[in-house]
Length: 229
Image 1: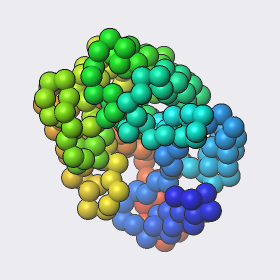
Image 2: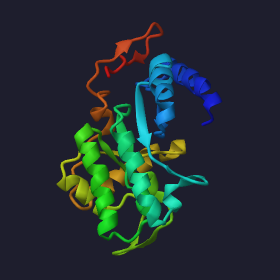
Image 3: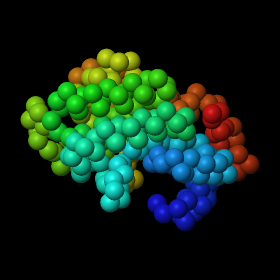
Image 4: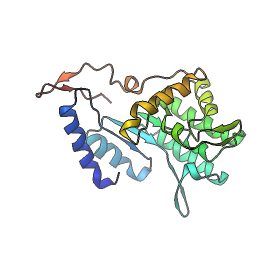
């Protein structure tokens, strides 16, 4: 969304929270850029009361501006992307990392250099205690040619095998861009993980939402308590 829509979104979440017969939480998927750290922390988390922030590392900065990482295959940009991503992972701002293997949509040959990039990102997440997300939206994208044959652009099995081997906390999620995909995409993500024995957790449980005892709002609807940070 545009920055000017953030306030509207926050109000819509509160309106939904007041009438829904299930818990409603408000949060944002954000990039990492050092100059905007206070905007994420002080405005989104502080002033608006976002109950979670998701890290989405979609871009790499170049001399000509930003490029969408899923469309990048230039090896000269891979190290820059990894450095920026590790910085975001280590920032302490976020509650989980969405589609951490998004960059493998462009870097399809999983050679030593690309695998080293996967390891660097996974190790940063393990060190920061940041959960990594198996993303169901990527399984709806057109398939591409990978080392082992046709595959989704993300999630990529080899990345998740590395994540499991190195002790990452792994969740599954839908990343739905349409309401009808909320459950469908989450189910696909879970099926993908289970297809090769990947141990995954429910994101709501990892975020602490399922363990919260709902209180009752003045209107009689469940009103979940804010999760402690």
